[in-house]
Image (tube, rainbow, N blue to C red; front, side, top):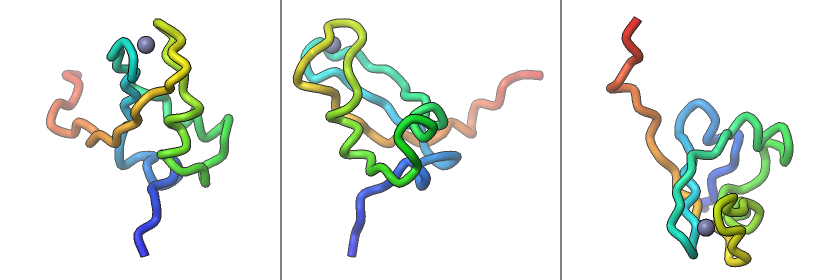
Length: 77
Ligand SMILES: [Zn+2]
């Protein structure tokens, strides 16, 4: 059975990008912060209805996509 990814699964492996369905604004979500708020068992698709665009406040919500963490670009030290 294929279950939707949860925040606990995403943490440390992926990043989450939310794209506003109305204005197209794209923001990277703060996964640890979301876990603090909603718990690590919440499913990623459910976030699409929770996350609100801070730009236009669209009532239609956002599309939430998993993104790979960028290991290829380590910060110069
Ligand atoms: Zn928007």
